[in-house]
Image (cartoon, rainbow, N blue to C red):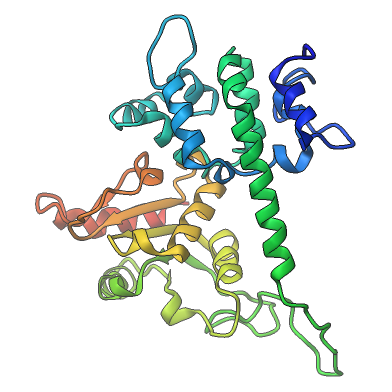
Length: 319
């Protein structure tokens, strides 16, 4: 890269590290991402604030024949044709693209810079480099402050009583010694306000000929362990699928948001059919963008309601 290029200016402003960062893709070493420190290049897209995203949209939303727009960027990010067509209907497709991409594995600030470089959008990098750098520095500083605020952990004093491994004995039917962990057909992601529908799901899927086994936190998970650790363990290792009960309250739940994004990270692009969204009642708010590209099981449609439970049971029974 030339001395005055976007990557060199990133380095000169304090984000370069003592060792070169690993390339985020099959690119030459002289890319904007490689000029960042490893920590900055690996930052999630959450590091970029609304102002930077809006300015990116001003450059990428217009469809021109002379410069790569958001659709070309979406293809390089791995989005398929139908997914891009869905994004086209959004008022701000670039913003929607970034929201959808940041839930996928490999999405990072460094990767975004590298893609823009490869697409020839050095004009975007040139104009936004200072703001992106500032965002990265603020994000790193904030993470360092949060880390410093954590309480000091006192080392556990062991005793002669045998202890089980971490994340064993977390459900009601688990073997306390971890020899036979309880397994499920599906993890149910829901808000407490939607528990009545979840109870109906239990009746329809567990207590009928389908004989499925659902993981319902309020019923199956033992208290006393970090909710994030339990959810990660159950979704990744104990449950073959995850059902997301989408409602207006779901959109406000940080726990549901974490569970959904974690499940999507295990199945990028939903190719493994791991996650199944359910809409069981009318919503006032917009359906979550990260689930728009996955087929929804719609309980609100009177024409298909009689097939609802059979379709859902079949989807959960697939190998």
